[in-house]
Length: 451
Image (cartoon, rainbow, N blue to C red):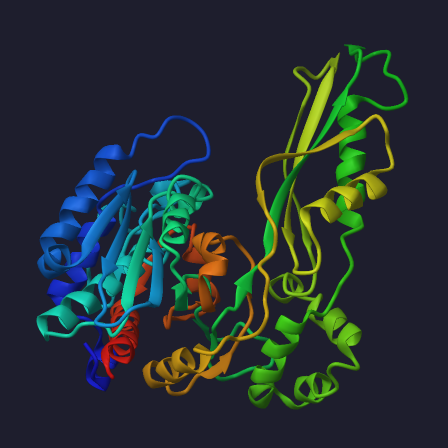
């Protein structure tokens, strides 16, 4: 699957069907409730072992729960690369809205349909397709390559990626390169940019969820005080939403804009040309759109609010959950301090809930960045190569210190509608995009196996 013909027309039926079969395994990770996907993970494991016999005959496999860590021994000492992907998927909200059932794994002339088609089973399968082909051709890496496929990325990776990364540390692994999900090739997303942009992300934002809670004596709604518990929590949420953390231009985003600048329209190209002196002004322009505001601010998203039991009963308690995605340079502690300062109400308890993570340390593109950039240009020749930050959380945050170059990227071309399918309705991957994924990994393995 490396020719330009294949990239234009997509994968053949057999290759598409192997991905579709993986999508039929309902390996769902949910935030609450017991794990019910054990059988689905075992079904997926059996499918992988059936489809890729050389991988499972020649690579060492170690399991961490349902996560799978493969070691492909090199001919020299040291570690060349760690390739990450995850096998779990998010639940489906409204199955009736899907064109095809989300776990039917339907293949037609254009697409492979199903939950996980983009996020992230296609990357698991594409990596294994490329490794299987390399083994069939008698190739072997110069230095060791690890494939780390997590089973709980969608619920923070604490029993998958966290354990696999600790195991690699125990082996004193230090890789040249780490590749994970997060960046793609977008069309029509970057304002004023007409060419596709390949975002090779250098790290990710942190995250924290803050709980706001109020208690009150309650009573009959005919005799309310000046403010009920619900009113008080609503005011606290409104204050946080109306007073977000400040806009700020970071070196990572400045680098992203500078790389994208040649493809921008005149006004934006001129504005970006004023960086770094006009960083604050450029940040204000980016704040006009949610997709770009997330790159220049720690975002504030009230997501849950609860309180009250009946229309004529004063509530005795109310609470809200506010999710923050943290820009490098800010921290979980800074988010909590911001919440206390903005809410300004001693009657509102403020505390972190659930798991949190700090933003990635980003020191630059890394020594092997150009290797991935060159491969991306080969797969999508018309794309502008840029960098950026993953706004969400990925498994790679557990491996940050294990590689000299970290990159979150997959060379699939997506527009705004495609991006909305991720974690949404009608997730699907085109046959040409799947061919691009396999070709990208094939070229990467060629780089790792060629003297």
